[in-house]
Image 1 (cartoon, helix red, strand yellow):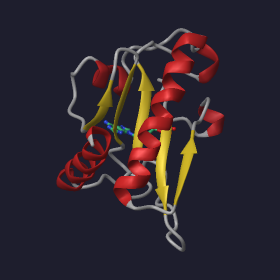
Image 2 (image 1 turned 180 degrees about the vertical axis):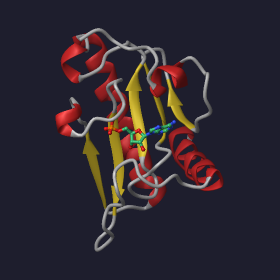
Image 3 (image 1 turned 90 degrees about the horizontal axis):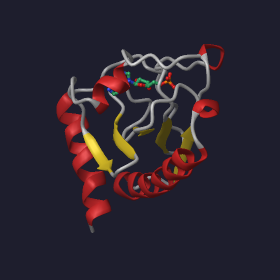
Length: 140
Ligand code: AMP
């Protein structure tokens, strides 16, 4: 399917809408999920326009998973989480709601259930604080 550049992550990449950045390099961008399923929920996206994993070039896929690994460890450390979930959805049938491929990085704690998927917006101050904590770990 042709890539639709009107999706919200394409707008984030073009700096047309606000977001809380965690990490950026030539090929990838990581930022706080605006409706997090847990504290410290981060999204990692490629700069290459691709809707699903199957549309992504191998080169962009390699860069993406490298950033996922880097940012996941930083989020786990910053949030002092004993566990961390990595999630990636392909297609509406799988629950994908934004048509630009992304990995979810979700810190997990015992007996803390996940909040709903893309349901409740977090306070901007909270997102800003967690983004700062994760960036601090990456810069240490
Ligand atoms: P998915 O359903 O896998 O496509 O996930 C899309 C994710 O994007 C959800 O977790 C949403 O909470 C998140 N999201 C939607 N709009 C924004 C936004 N403007 N900034 C940050 N995260 C967003």
